Image (cartoon, rainbow, N blue to C red; front, side):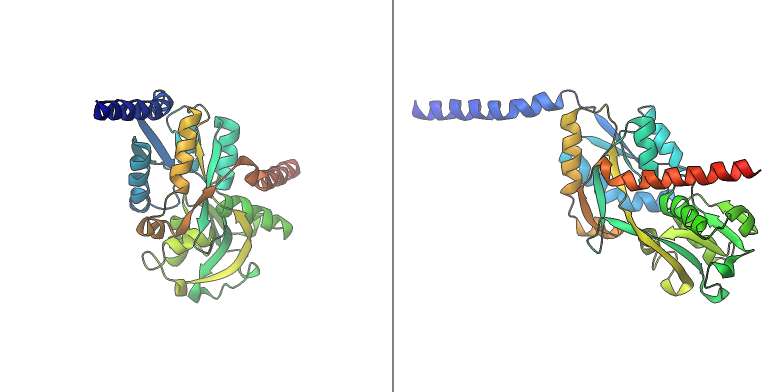
Length: 292
């Protein structure tokens, strides 16, 4: 009889403990779509994020589908129309997603140096003898995506401090679409200079390029780390679980592929300085339009 009571009490305790979890999960979707901005080719992005996807599925007990996009705006629009549930975004694209799609930052990338941030680069080809911004006057230039922080926003504001209008300063201005494309375009001599960042530059070392292939002629101040954001309408219990899943990600191989040391808790206020830069860039554009 004692054994029967022990079994009964054990089952009662298990049911009591399991009930909140079952209650919390009943409103969760059966699948999550994880959108990522195209900092590299679709194949490379899939390879880099694959271990993380497996970790998320194990922790959340949900199917997680990785969705690579053709441009940054596609991820924002996807979240706006409920096609993307969580996303890897840059700081600027996050600010746009927060405004347009109600995105909420829950985690932030931490670099291999332990800092939750990264630096913008301006690069040229090593054997080009282009070693300063002045040397690039009249040359071909590549931004990445209009929504990119280090690839467009930060260098645009920097150029403004030098009284440089890229459209008139350079002989040609293009948007490459990704950091990988910009770096490879410089390496191949298709453009003479480009803006990128130390994180995405490091991701391609030994694969698409080597350090010796380039001159790094400018490094920005620290930019807040890229966030993981969730769709506002998701259940709070799921948002919390997603956040915990990212922060608990410790797989060495997976982190090595991403060229980061992990994820830390993130929040919206971390990107207020980016909103200031967005306002500055908007003022620059309005001033240029007024002159025309």
